[in-house]
Image 1 (cartoon, helix red, strand yellow):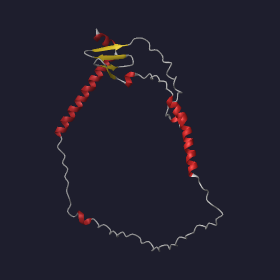
Image 2: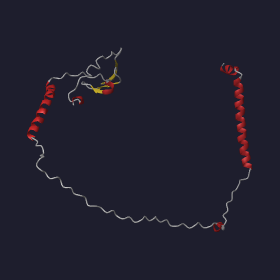
Image 3: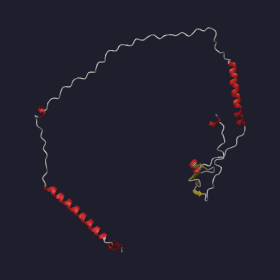
Image 4: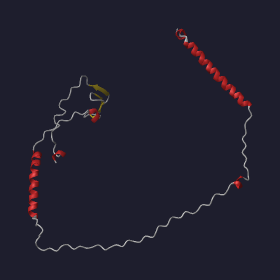
Length: 197
């Protein structure tokens, strides 16, 4: 049945015959080349060296030795001794301002203590525990131990394999609920955050 369908088209038998003729022609060409190569005598190449060829070559021109150019002699620069300038003498009219180091230290410690009080108040207040971010647990903790022995291998956020004595697959079915609490604590400042500085 398939042979009849193949030969119903008029082009297929023509293409088959054409391919067969091309193959036969190539085979004939290869066989005739091989027979012709066997009948031809081998070609020999003879290389001869003429003994007087080296004498006819002119000698190379002489090479002058390369010498560096001489620079003119340079004289060392004469240096002048540095001029020493004495500080102006004090005439007693201008005096350096006196710094009261004790008063400056007390002011700095007072400023430091006042700045530390708000931070101390923040530390004393009980902080709210932030809820855990909803990471995909299969990426964060792919393998977790079980208290009763064995472990859980998380394949995705919804499918796990529990391995104890036997391997038991488990998947959660249904639509995953949307999380609307992801950005609730985005504006909360954490103690020691870089924004506090």
